[in-house]
Length: 242
Ligand code: NAD
Image 1 (cartoon, rainbow, N blue to C red):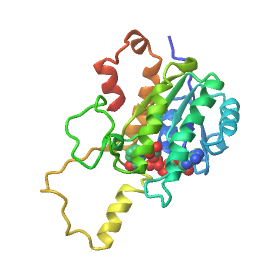
Image 2: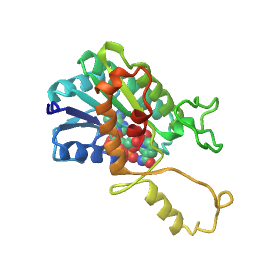
Image 3: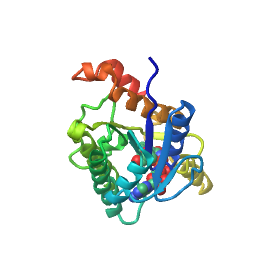
Image 4: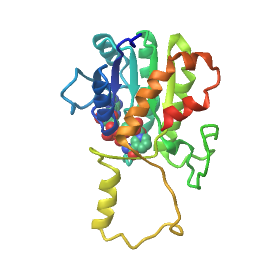
């Protein structure tokens, strides 16, 4: 039996990750629309708005006919005023959930961050059972942890199913942070510094793989396998993090 066509609203879909998610959705034949404060992707219906405004979200959800929301919006790391992180990543995410439930949305996938469990010390061989640190590394990561908590606690409320993904470094076409930052360090002549003993490891994910992971997570949220398992199976977790 062929799967029913999914209708995605990608919040933050004009961003680096969001644009690749939109591309993956279109490539597999599903429908995509974008909700963002800026428009950069011109191939899909676009709804201009701020996630802190629940009314704008409800309007976009209704007009787009969305069945699944992918929420990947966030202010970029490095803001002068950290209150913007809490406003968008926590209050804005609460508004997304309220709007999703009000509109009968069934599935919500949230782009969190590996930084939510980072406090400045090495993180080695851990998984999602590790608790949030008592002292968060910074306001950005703290707001992402609080936003993620809001999303996960909403699972099952008002018929909404939720999941959060935690990417670390992301690279690929359209990246405006990772390689740009490395190149700027090179231009400033900062290449002779070394952190640690040259054995440090860090996770990097290619942006198209991360986009695919969002769609796998969305699919698994309401698959029979997910419904049959109160606890996520090993294969379900692997599929959502590959
Ligand atoms: P990005 O800045 O390229 O994209 C974010 C998008 O969100 C932008 O288009 C922006 O306009 C939109 N946005 C911001 N505030 C908004 C608001 N109030 N209302 C509506 N739209 C708003 O960032 P990205 O690199 O694509 O990151 C996407 C997600 O991945 C973010 O949630 C980020 O925290 C997470 N993440 C990114 C990285 C990375 O290395 N880039 C690593 C880990 C997690």
